[in-house]
Length: 169
Image 1 (cartoon, rainbow, N blue to C red):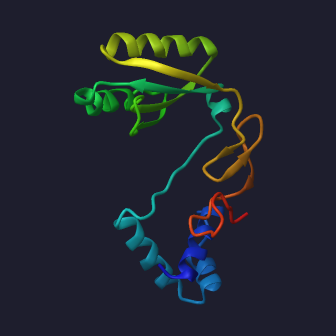
Image 2 (spheres, rainbow, N blue to C red; image 1 turned 180 degrees about the vertical axis):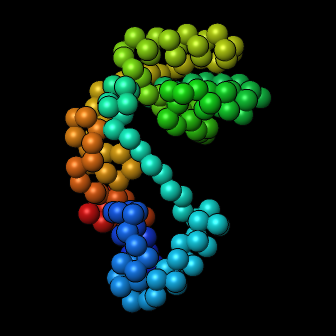
């Protein structure tokens, strides 16, 4: 990937609604060339698009990070099952004794108990080894957010930065 395209992709992270012409001006190319590049990156799975909502306004007032220990033979099935639940924000197999990381949106602190009971009843043999409540998010997908989860400022990660954790904002 060329440095100009890297820069352009970071700019796309700041505002994905920008027109191809805006990117073309920034990258000193044509809008059609930008469209072709983005289409190719999307087709190859090199980039994906996400849309998010202010969770608080959608009724999700908090989140929890759960670490589950799942028998290796059941990991795929359990992962697919819990990933399909409406509360599930992220579900990922990891190389660790607690081999499934689960982030769930919660309507309330009591809702966590419902999720834990569902895990125990729907996923026999699975143990929740650690749980952490997320009381407030300050950053979501490269966006700084206020107490209600509304966008305040863009601070997208820059995967090509020399310093780990650097941002383009």
